[in-house]
Amino acid sequence: MEFPENPTENDIKAVAEFVIRSVYTRGAVVVETLEWDSQGQLSGIFLGDGVKFRYTLQDGVLSYAPVNPADLS
Image 1: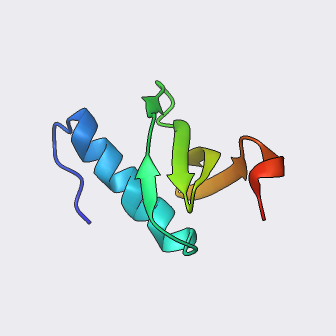
Image 2: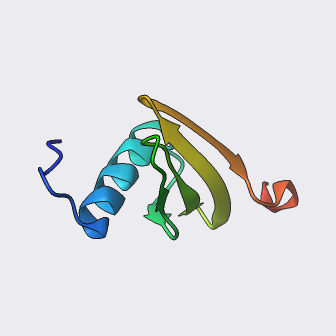
């Protein structure tokens, strides 16, 4: 997936969803919130299979954890 020269928030969200879907394969992925800091780190909340996860994407590395671990089955 190519990143546009002047990405919009929707472009960044689409890339984040693409990356998360490549790792999180349990169900549909919807990025709910998105923050991009000056260091190039993306972070926010995504909904996956009915559970909210907090994610961070930096330097090509994705990490995520449930917002409320009790929601996991």
